[in-house]
Length: 183
Image 1 (cartoon, rainbow, N blue to C red):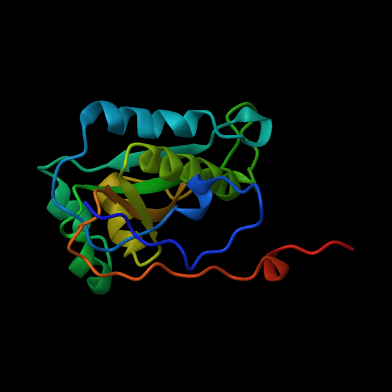
Image 2 (cartoon, rainbow, N blue to C red):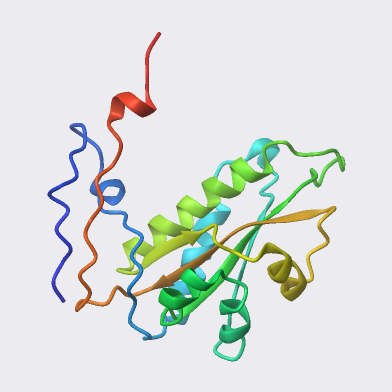
């Protein structure tokens, strides 16, 4: 399988390749993700930092039987390319702290940190993950039986092997100066 060409991406000296080569393709092979790999991918999320170590995230993934139902919660444009992805899922944030029931203003931030762990662990196994905001959130909440007073669907995602016959370009990144300043 040919490797994607990441030469358009320029990182500062010392940045690990796991970050530079993280990629969110839209062209997947339908091959199943190994069950042990999938378990490890989501176990990686447990080790993410969170406010008060509350770990307010959860991830729900489809089975072969529920794939079409999960797919139906995506906007049409995402349904078109995500249909081949063997793993479809949703990242969900619990909105209140477990230790005192107070609102957790950092739950979405913490869920994002856990999502990055999922993404990087998938990459370690040779898979790719792609997060999506193009979701019919009402449909997802209904499918997953989400109590919106307690939880929030943050995004949907795919995990799978990239199609080696695909021709998606590797995207450049914003300049470092646009995301980091010292004052």
